[in-house]
Image 1: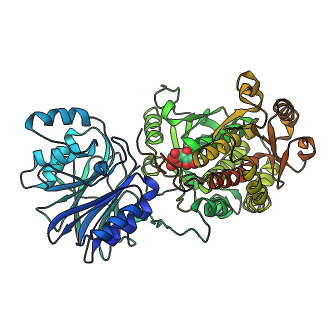
Image 2: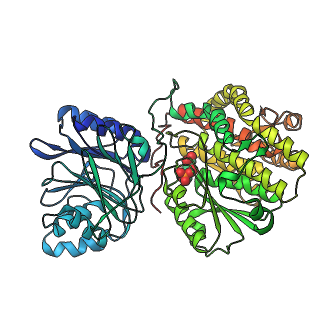
Image 3: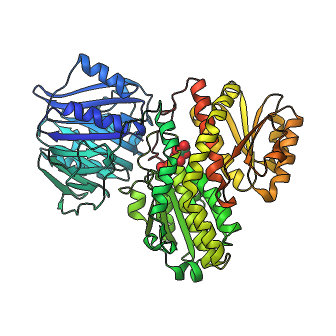
Length: 609
Ligand code: F6R
């Protein structure tokens, strides 16, 4: 949520800032702005809306200089208007500030500053930081930043320009992501290392109220008291963010097609010559066999949905008690966890605030913390005892597709190995499942090819619907949850996911003649029950679509439309069932004229609680 970029270099900084902001636009697109140290002093240009609007303004009012900061906003405090766009100015005009996060005590800070005559020009929490900098400044910007940080509560990453130090850029962070990097051509800060303009020679992640001052060739770090400290550079390979759509009309469609590769690359790190190899995960066989009593999977949104699927496998197949938990609920629920609990945190971005807080809670309670993340240089990866990196490549579309699929593939590997180690399956079955898992990327590719046309045609039939339902049982319920989220987040169409057997306990009253009900039915053992649920909604006039396997297709022939998935092992059906649903959401959103890659009110990385 909100993206910060800052640079100090030997060429005009404005184009670098704009390029960086375009890569960070996934973090919010309510407004954008840049501030540059120009020959006439500090200047800023801001615009409501996307980076393109800022570019238009900059064409009329160009800014040129060697140091600057930029910001793309996801509104928390104050409407998405230009007056609330960053950078924010201190009352004296000496400081310009960009901020990501939330200053939770902004209202109190504001109240404390008003008696001294402070006048605020925005409704943002960020402006209070700019005012505090003025209040605490006595010629030393690092000391002023340290004192400002000591007053602020919440989570934040700040980029600061100070008119008295035109050759220096300042930054600080607490709880919100920020990297500082040194490259061949300059020094940089960014909310996401993937937005840096060049491959860094040194890169550092800021945390714990750390402050950095950057000049063209140096980075100096300070602690929360403003005392100089040494930091060790992070040893990670930075994955550059790309704005390339691979020839597709949208990032989302590109990323749907990248799923086989994302799963293949992820599995390559887990499938060794002897079978599934979890040695890089920090989990020992002894722990899995003898100490593990319970698994909790904690995540948000689609990542949580992968947990719903994994729960069925860990519990139903590996026979290990397991629950999937929404991070924002779990962290306040005083959960029963101890050193016999394996807590698994799933996050594409690796920086979702609630998931990170839940991770810290589980560690405090002594659980073993394993994370499944897609961004190596992220807080969740840094703070977990064990990390399995999904290799989906950077995901740009706000609606996740390839990261979701990559996360599921990690869970399959874990579930198979856990089931074998706990004696729930024999070695022959483990081998067969592992073999089937290795072939999953091809099956996903087939699912994309074989269902794309039907999904597009169906979207033409469904795009004007008022409500839509996705139902399924067991693993299909988990896939239905993801299908429904995809539909509502990008097409703005009201959709709900339900356990198929639960519909008649209330929700079926919403089914009217023509209401689309998508029935996911891939599980042989319970298909007869799901078929009965299809009949119930059909009897009430629903327009029904069955998403099913070749073997079950005849049983679901009464559906108005049947989507047949490629054959795959029953454990992995979520990965295939979701594909036509992603495509259906995509084409529905397209027919409805929605902003597919950047849906309204959303941002890709949710760093506020
Ligand atoms: C939906 C979507 C979100 C994320 C959720 C968690 O398409 O992308 O629901 O899954 O915000 O984000 P991460 O995985 O970054 O923790």
